[in-house]
Image (cartoon, rainbow, N blue to C red; front, side, top):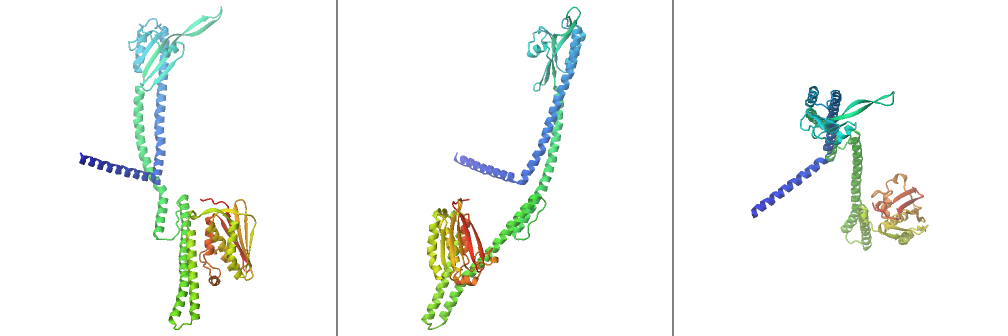
Amino acid sequence: MFPVNLFTCGLSGVWGITLLKDRIHNIIFLRSLKTRIFLILLIVGLIPCVSMRYAILRNYEQRAVSVRTSDITTQLRILANHLITYHYLQDTSYEVINAELDQLSNLYDGRVMVINNDLRVVKDTYGISENKTMISEEVVRCIKGESTNKYDKDNGYIEMTIPITETVRFEDGPQETVEKEVVRGVMLVSASTDSIRVTMDILSRKALLVEIIAIIVLFVLSTLAVQALIRPFEKITEALNKAQEGYTDDPISVTDCLETEHIGDAFNRVLGRMKLLDDSRQEFVSNVSHELKTPITSMKVLADSLISQRDVPIELYQEFMTDIAKEIEREDKIITDLLALVKMDRTAADLNIAEVDINVLVELIMKRLRPIAQKRDVELVYESVRPVTAAVDEVKMTLVISNLVENAVKYNKEHGWVKVTLDADHQFFTIEVADSGIGIPAESLDHIYERFYRVDKSRSREIGGTGLGLAITRSAVLMHRGSIRVESVEEEGTVFRVRIPLSYIPV
């Protein structure tokens, strides 16, 4: 039993995997836009065909039953007059009437019963209910003068009742006579609808044949329509693949339809953005390589000078070593700023948000930078319009304020000033850093946040700038969902305005 069970389990596992693969294949199949369009067109085409077939058959059936009922009613009324004329209800031996009743029964493959006022069957073409009492709702209603008819589709017959009436004259006063219809009996007829059903079966088969032909035509037309509709998307997919594989850098243009044109335009914008980012990346790598190589080159030149000379004076040795230490410090600052910038490029999930007293934070930064300002004889002024508490990342906000104030000090004039103003409204707080420095040329304002961009490269290197400070500042501001603006006039000064929400709302 063990091998058999093992074999059975193995088969079950294989069968389960096969079913899973089939389901996955079906899901992928239904996810295809081509398949969906094909099915929609096929279904939209089939619904009218099926509805028309049903409507035609239904209308024919109703019409055929109505005509059959009308014909039988007409003949029954004529026959009812004959029954009264020949007093058939009192004497059923009249052969002409019996022949007419039998003929009507045979003509419609049905049954005719004549019932008098006492609900007694005086004539039955089947000959099985004569002289019996017939009590039914339809007969009773008909005796009261109301004709009835009923179509039983399931059993295939039409049942009708026709009153047998006689016109009787009554004297209503000495000189007035009134005619009145009096019901003397009822004719109950059951007529077969087999001929109608046979005709409907023939029509149904023909309609089915038409449906099959329509399905084939719809299948072909839907396939052609899908190919025509999907072809523009296949073109754009082909163009995207070529662009991805690097065969072409030309913009994608598929103008077969408005949707593909929009997709092509969107991709071209994305491609342009990617090229811009790639160019920026290459420029960034080049700048990083240059910035990191420059201090190393300087250190190597200084070290080679010391190595090539014998009996180097201690003063020269100390001077060279001091220069080497400065280059090392500069290299360390570049690497530190690069690491900070890389961290800024990450998602805002790295923010450590907490309630921070911005007034206290700015005062601490001003206190730390005041010695640097004093060396350059620059006056630091801090003005707080109102107390401000905000939900921010204290470390990154410190970088923002420090970089702006430190740049304002370093790129200032002698005997200049730097003013920091803190204000807030009900949604945002604003830090404004204004200085009396050398200013920024108008053509450089759009580039100052780019990595390693320097307005005056010689002066930036002289004061130890890396070209990353404003890039770090802007990244930190954007991580807080804030904004930074700059206004500057050469040789007059610069104003940076930072606007940060009081409450941080993550995306």
